[in-house]
Length: 382
Image (cartoon, rainbow, N blue to C red; front, side, top):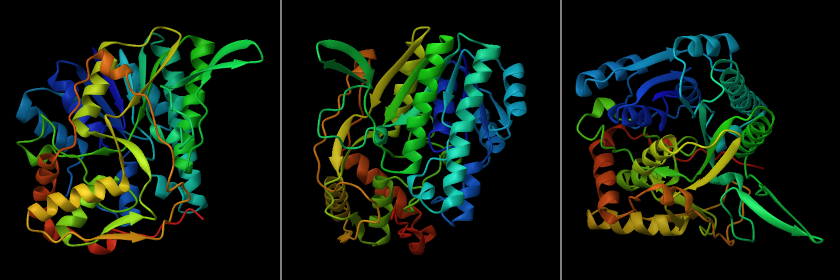
């Protein structure tokens, strides 16, 4: 299977490229390095330096014997997207190519405009490229559980059956995002659903929870193949941030009451979910939605787990509740369903003290590179 990865330089895009390449897929990656540029712009660098895509693919070929084709350019530019599809016509496209940060999207008007134009523009170009060059190609789009918000009813897997005044219909589950970034992900879903109905596209939309971790089966013996590991408030996911804070002796920053609950998954499970979605594609004319997470935790749960594991490593890990910079419910009902990927064969990697210990020990080896001023940036929603 020929797989094209939009956003192949990112935290998830690069590990996905290696994972599929190692699994026998023919892989190409495309990226504009937008995430790198934004990280530099706001001084939010990774815990360690990450080689560019040309260097990474060279290192991967040396380590594995497999080649990954690279396209560097702006996926918001139609001419560049056309060039890719004429050169490498895929059987499936994985769409990661979004401005991925909720806090960045809430910075100011410029950041909001960039997020809106980039995320929707790339999605639209992908749709039109598939329609023009390969209409049966399977689109796998990385959505987010944040699209749903925190409703006071169970979160179904993408769709909701509604009985109303004696009639019945299935609708996309109502969504109420908590940031502009998450709102653009809702718009992605709406765009794809429209063109599925109009043009009979085949689409899998993966509503993914926050991802944690760094180690995969493909990179664990070669640090040249590691992905980004941001620990700042803007581009770092919460558990990755807490791990670095524990290593640095910086109090774990719990927003507000800390009862905000979400669905989380190990980076290895992201890769497995993608592979399973490719091996079991959506039907022509289908928008298939999976909720992609393995466990639910509150922020307090995560902080306590990191504190306990850190203390076992003889670190003194304090927890500090701070004023919540976000506008969100700090106590809420949360019961999302997530059976679809398990039915395809997902075997989860659950969060354990061993996994947390491995992450903290890694952060400790890079402790001298941690810049404390980068951790909490006070980006406010209101």
